[in-house]
Length: 456
Image (cartoon, rainbow, N blue to C red):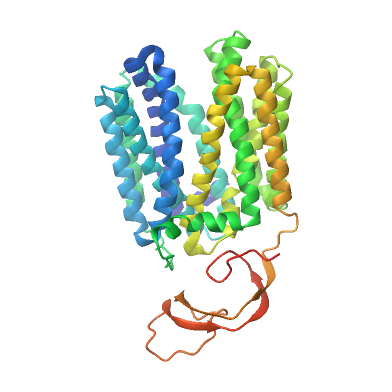
């Protein structure tokens, strides 16, 4: 898997991602301590509100940036967002009111909502080989899981010798280092994109591709399954361990580590599996595993049982999340990747925006046993819906018909554009009025300017 790091550009970008993740993990701990300083007994409410604001920023800002990302040089955009994040984090130690936390958290995560989809959409242009790209996806999954495991421990060690305010400064430095690593490489240029007329059509362009593609509608259902299982694990683990099992903080950390361990195990194994098996059965298996882990939680497991369930849950979530980039890459033209990755970022976090408060509310008002059962049902129903929407026969090339059409858009003189030029049209890609005759043919099919609906 590590041979993908031999690619210099990807290696620098991966290091930038890892360093920024570590810094963000330290800020998560420092933010909890800052909330306690300002609100004391209401710190949980402050953190819950901050988490909701984070999700709102993700859902709302990602499509906006995705709509206009192709207009800007990638390196300039990514470096600017890294430096903006550094500036926002530097302001956190000077907060004196709770509302200031909310404003800064929105700004910080608005920048992340712009950075992450653009970063993710660029990797397929750097690693064009499918196997190399799959290894990169697995490495990215490992990086996220290791950050979840190691950042709290690193924060605890640092807090023994310094105040929590310094963690914010370390995070700012991490973002600056990330920006420097991005500057150190030459990134592939953005693909020219024929932009849809009107702000709303540009903002929703990625969403339209996403929701008109059956495999991606299935992915959206699986995103809901991941968020239902993940919300149960993230929101209610501390309650299960401390209040139900009457155990300590060490056991809480071990329970969280079990989910991360399951996810990392799958991330290590999955590249070889995907050389032999398509994404659909792998991802549906992940959905079933998550639902099963929640239903087994209904039985009221011991601590050892809970660790086993969270291991299963983390493995199932990784089976769904790790191959996601492959589906997105396959489902659009290269120039539309930023918009489509932004749509995935926004829609997946919309699911979390629902399931986070749902898991907390159900845990308080319906008990943890009922919460396991209800969220397990959500995960199972979502997986079943994905299986129905995303057909087992999902070829890349599809036979389809075209009606006669005359239009103007940016294009190359390729197999879809066999027409005469008069000489004034300029270098390709160029834009001029041209005609398409009616007919039927087959080729790799994605939703784009020439294919607005999926063939039946």
